[in-house]
Length: 495
Image (cartoon, rainbow, N blue to C red; front, side):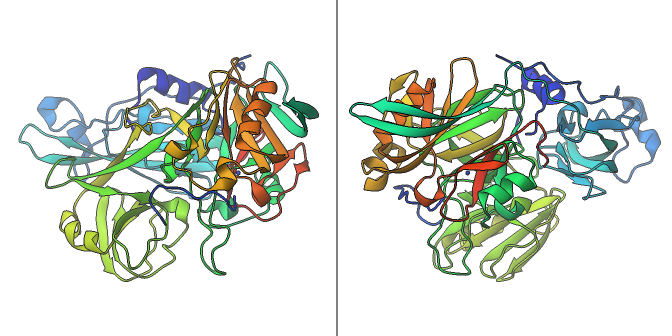
């Protein structure tokens, strides 16, 4: 659901790298819910004649005089994708906006709603893209493209510098801190680690890192660590995985990574804009305020659920609109429905159950897109980000100490002023990343610590009992509890 520039397409095709809570943060936002040598690129075949429209004979995909012409540039050859890379299939086959995708073998690969193929195991599969094109008579015609893929051996990742872990003594004013630091070279593959591979679960940081074959890992965003037993322990901040927003927090500061290894930091706010039948204007427009977050059964909400949530919603209330392959397949009341691998579910509660219900009907084409702004509402270019974690507040900006925590949405003293165990992450001028963990530090101290470690931009991650740092097979800082999510780095990361 993103529009990419040519530069972004090239980066995703040629350099797509593979792509942590406890939280003591109380937010004022809505409640509840130098550069690496590029590896060998995937084999990209030349496009052939477009496929036929869905339900039409293959001859219809010839010239315009022979009938409708598909918008897809569907390849005849098999697309070879290394196990540790992603492939932007949507860009390769020139998918129309708001296309839908599915994969024939879910054990070999998965495909995101934006058409990004994520390898899971060696083998072959077909990725089916379904798109719509408005014909001269004004009607929308559906077309399909079945692209054959082969997931092959992983390719080596070459870095110009090596990562480094060390214990340093860093002096801030009259205080001296023992600080665990890890320096990550620009371009090292990075990904979000979700506990149990789903939003709302928890797992030991060491287990999560080992399962994904990470070389380094740090805890990520805040989460519902103190919920009642049996309740989902859901994240609180922004999470972007494989280019998809798998959770929205819309407060604090977010660090993001592009497919070619560039890191960026901003007060990211994400808006989900929904549409229908190719239109995002009335009467087809709809919205969702959160993603993959359990709604308050007594509240008013419209929430998007994607496969990152798991196989099912995990609750049975509200109006559930099930969208499969871009089309509404089911509308269920007060039912714990399954979330399609090739789709999503929109759940309406309270007033939205009435105001938005008319936007959906079985058989209607439904889609959504993301809008990225900073906390002041200014649009920012984050459409090329494939991995991101939001926490905060920001503690370092352009090499200078920075603190605007209250405006970012924080109000609890444990964030604003009280010393605590901290995890922090920063970006150096050369594009490398530095991660730190430290005990008994204030947010202001953390900024000075990150600056002493060489960072120009820096932010706070979840801390307290969630603070954890894993490096080269061992824990440098062990969390006092299981965590919800993490940032993973490594040349051998698996999805």
